[in-house]
Amino acid sequence: MLPLTHAPSLRVVIAGSNADLLRALRDSLEAGPGVVVCAEVSDGAAALRIALEERPDACLVTDEPGFDSVGVVDALVEHAPHVSVVLSGEDPHDDTLMRAVAVGASGYVLSGIDGAKLAAALLDAVSGQPAFPERLATLLIARLREEPRAA
Image (tube, rainbow, N blue to C red; front, side):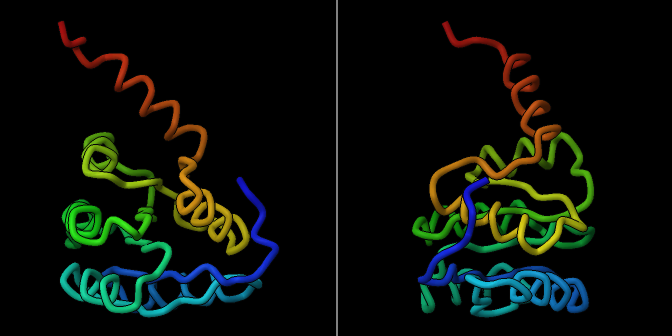
């Protein structure tokens, strides 16, 4: 992961339905230098609106039960392509991970990652680098290898 050591700040929107989780992610990101959380939003429509108005660098979307994280990724990638989108959650279901990547997610970070590593993963995504822990990157490669090849 690239180090986050210089200004300007990385501007991030956090989207998810659990207010306590959003607050914890904000606190984790803002504990170190270089990250400004522009907004915490509770639904995809608000994430898209803020992404278009505030023009953040990244959107961190929580992957949690009852929240359409893949739908949020899809909407952001389609309508706000200037924003890198990374999901955050527990160990994702294989299909969720594959669908998120298929619609344009730049990464997936596991819950509990410390603030510096989370900021570095977001910076990687903004810089065009994949932001996946090794185990999930390995899973993605294995799943792609299983896909039938086009003739």
